[in-house]
Amino acid sequence: MEFFGNYLMTFIEMGGLFSPLLFIVFHLLRPMLFLPVVFICISGGVLFGPVAGSVYSIIGITLSSILFYTMIGWMPKSLNRLIQVKQKLMGKHSELTTSQVTLLRLVPFIHFHLLSLCLIEVSSGFKEYMKSSFLSNIPFALIYTSIGGWLSHLTPFYIFAFLIVLLPFIYILRRKEIIIKWQDFFPLHETQNTRL
Image (tube, rainbow, N blue to C red; front, side, top):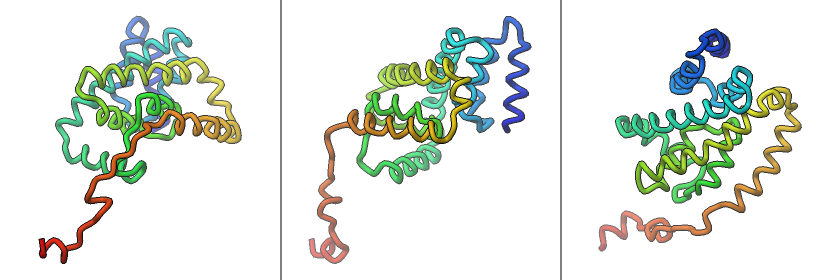
């Protein structure tokens, strides 16, 4: 897949005036090609420079988020699977804030659309989802596009140090309330249910 991604980036580079449009479309095709978002943002910085690459990446990632919101409504089985993965990773009743999602998007190995699902869960509708998704995409696109060359040369030690610095911020920006359902706190056994 990485060879295919490099081939597509070369194709986009030779696209002339249509290169930005091809790059944005490539953002939409990314989930089907199983390419990480980080790869595309870094490539945008290499192809278009930090400013134009960031703008094109923000547009592409935002359109990808809109497409995810639309498609997940049509695929309830995939939605249920994603919810189960989220619950296994973060717990049943945990909800992330937009600030936490913004910071988690900076971690390259966390699934992009799993974080989009977290935004869907805390949003009241499409408009609020789009606003929070757009705001959480901006730092991601700016950082990975601007310093893409620097990130590609990082050693595992520096990546680990970056993650250690990032973890306290995720904890500090967490939602400060915990919801415990009555049934989870006081589970009823089958024998008690029959008596009631």
